Image 1 (cartoon, protein in one colour):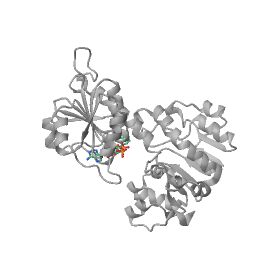
Image 2 (cartoon, helix red, strand yellow):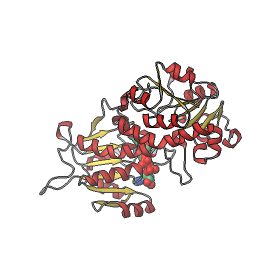
Image 3 (tube, protein in one colour):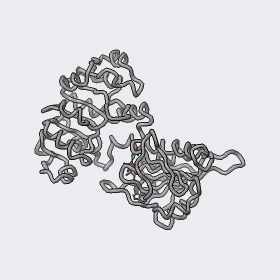
Image 4 (cartoon, protein in one colour):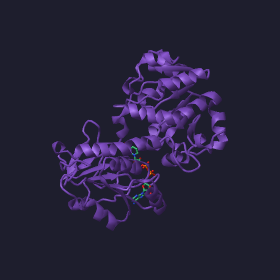
Amino acid sequence: MIIGVPKEIKANENRVSIIPGGAEALVHAGHTVLVERGAGIGSGFDDEAYRQAGAVVVESADEVWARSEMIVKVKEPIAPEWPRMREGQVIFTYLHFAASEELTRAVMDSGAVAIAYETVQLPTGELPLLTPMSEVAGRLAVQQGAKYLEKYFGGRGILLPGVPGVEPATVVILGGGVVGSNAARMAAGLGARVVLMDVSLNRLRYLADVMPANVTLVYSNRHNILTQIAQADLLIGAVLLPGKKAPHLVRREDLKVMKPGAVIVDVAVDQGGCVETIHPTTHDNPIYEVDGVIHYGVANMPGAVPRTSTLALTNATFPYALTLANKGWREACRGDRALALGLNVVAGKVTYPGVAEAFGLPYTPVEEVL
Ligand SMILES: NC(=O)c1ccc[n+]([C@@H]2O[C@H](COP(=O)([O-])OP(=O)(O)OC[C@H]3O[C@@H](n4cnc5c(N)ncnc54)[C@H](O)[C@@H]3O)[C@@H](O)[C@H]2O)c1
């Protein structure tokens, strides 16, 4: 199969969908890999690395799209890319169709086969192509929080681990899923006093087994949240209600119980945030202050560390890309239910219920297109 790797053109997107090691494995399996010039630069992979891996570096995005049977990307195609999509072409990438009817209709009109990273789902319910980005965001939340606690940025001027004779900072984390548990491990490793809160008792029991001794597990309810945020130097939001807006667990009036110069990093901002006063910010201008509390609301945190994010993402996506290349999309999806759940649009038909519902479009069960 001919597999295309276009350069990402969405603003500030430096990740790349296939690294040279992946290209090498695809070429070894008998495929041709076309990489747009400069596609890997933002993640530290130059064109020469792709050439050495056996890939063909081509000059333009048009050429990559025109020649490839499968396009592997990171972000959803944006408007300038829409005319390049074509009938029968497989597009394997993050798509987030439910957020854009225009994109959904553009892909439907193109006749392409769109497989969305974010809806590939294992029988356990896990979303294996979202997990790596939550791991990155969870760990980065602590790194960013530590930075904005510095006085220069308006923070409390407190060092997370303290020093001998000086108490460590208190880090309170709302939500003990992938983001929350990664944040907790990172903060605990730095020596902070960590409080991790969740509503799932089973999850709390599991976390109690695996977390270090400086992580305390507390059931998440209104009373406990108010008690804990009053102690927090750094508050991390990491709650998710699948398919819904995040609940506002911390309200505007609650900020007055917090310490002046405390920092809130609300990772759940992409689902509306679990802190009422959070709004999305960018890497260029990541923080703002409300009632003396610093707010950080970057909605695409992994973009700050594209090298790590690319490696983490491609570790997870590559085995699926290889199966798609080896077997073709239909055989690959027949053989792997998790991958079949990634099918969102096939030849003009919407095959993912959430997307059909979002725009009142007819829904075609995946089985009918397989
Ligand atoms: N900003 C970014 O760049 C970025 C990157 C990755 C993920 N995210 C977002 O981070 C959020 C968390 O993702 P995740 O992968 O950790 O999800 P997850 O499903 O693994 O974890 C969510 C946790 O929240 C818990 N929860 C639900 N209601 C709660 C409540 N009232 N109080 C406390 N805990 C509660 C759940 O029990 C679950 O353990 C999502 O909104 C995700 O989209 C953002």
